[in-house]
Amino acid sequence: MKPVTWFAPAWAFLCGAVASGQLGWSLDVLGRLLLGVLMAGPILTGLSQVINDYCDREVDAINEPQRLIPSGQVSLRHVYTLTILLTLLGCSMAIFLGHQVALFVGIGLICAISYSLKPIRGKRNGWFGNTLVAISYEGLAWMAGHAAFGTLTSQSLAIALLYSLGAHGIMTVNDFKSMQGDTRMGIRSIPVQYGKVMAARLVVITMGVAQIGVIGLLVWWGHPVAATVVAVLLAAQSIPNVRFIRDPEHNEVFFNATAIMLFVWGMLAAAIGLAA
Image (cartoon, rainbow, N blue to C red; front, side):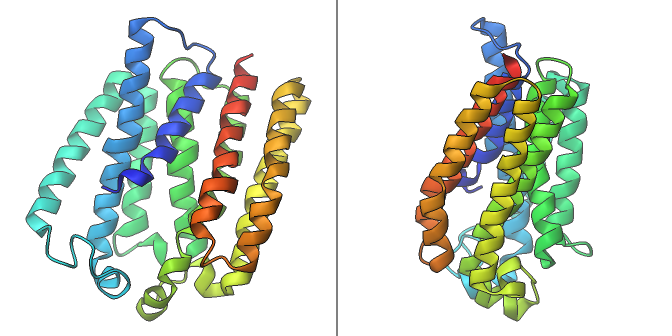
């Protein structure tokens, strides 16, 4: 279930909840927030990772044979059981949080299945596959967080979509380490299609354009403080961006810990600006 992947959707749900302007310190509100974070992170993201690992067991046998399914540490029966349990639990939590949240979760599950399973298997093309993941991990999670506490606004929707665009670039970062296996299995990830350096440039450009869009909208809507914070965080990404472009394969961890972390702090700043 890869706990490291839980952070992005859980954080996006939190940011959406903040953007609603309805958060408080009551037990009811905090309980709903905790439930939503658990749903977005460990439950639904964990589910998507299980599905992806199952569908990737052949390519993982080439790229990372030590992983649980290719190495035989986890049987396919365990995979099926866990998939059913996580699906039931995630859908139940979504329904409890509201029908609109359940709708976003349903769309997210369709995206997760379309990304991994044949015949669609969206991950075979980096542009399409990354779009499915980015919308699910950032946009839908943000919208679900907002909808769990209040009516989703057009401003919050626009910011969620822009951060989904930025997340499209972030998804590419994970593809550099698997270029050999992806090439052999016919998976046309962004690095496979354009090479390491051009793919790294596309990552940086996509993330930057998304954040510039957020800054522009925040200024337009009268949130100059939030816009300034996002702009400062964007400027601070310049150093890790340059380092990543020079050698993306060996600077992936550094880029995740710096540029991407600054990106996600900008999400919270934008959410606070919307709530103000």
